Image 1 (tube, one colour):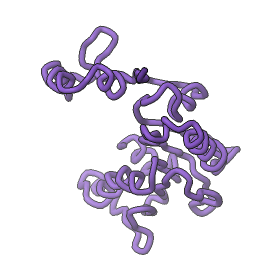
Image 2: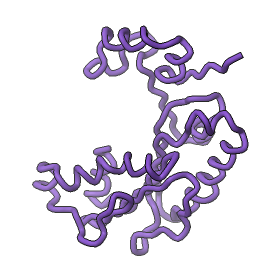
Image 3: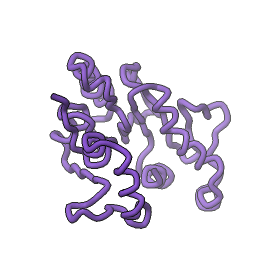
Image 4: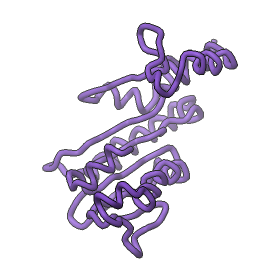
Amino acid sequence: MFVLMYLTLTKRKRFVALASATIDAAERLLAPYKINFEKNPRLRQFYGKQEVLGMWTDREFSCACGAKFIALGAGSSPRGMRNEAIRPDIIYFDDYDTDEDCRNPVTLDKKWQWAEQALYPTRSISEPTLVLWCGNIIAKDCCITRAGKLANNWDIVNIRDKHGRSAWPQKNTEEQIDRILAKISVRAQQGEYFNNPIAEG
């Protein structure tokens, strides 16, 4: 999160389009950015007050640094989005896939088509665009795996690394991981914490 904020506050990027499965989910994911711009004293100290009156809503806001943030649900109309002359230069998909969508190939194809044919083309051809996908691999075929196959770089981070140790020991101790995993099936563990969805049957 703070990397994207840094890129906008330092004017390296000017327009963040955050897409999620629904508009409500996208607004929830955009909320921490808005709250930090409003209330983080360190950000205010270094970069000044960022709220711009009249352009500060839960779904879309513009900052004094010149950056714009917008939340989009899958299927909404992104065409024509601009921040003055700037097209989205960060396109960020977060928790875009849902279990329900991945069980229906027609729905999954529609969501992928929206990402690929509606949102992605809002970017500028002549300017570099950062495209990020964050979320779990919840099915063998899902939007995040389709995007991963096209990505220049794809990092898959599990709760435990290849040596079986916590991938983030400062946050998740072995005891905490063991306690959580003991309460759910192997199928649920693999799908949620190891990016290895296991199909029923």
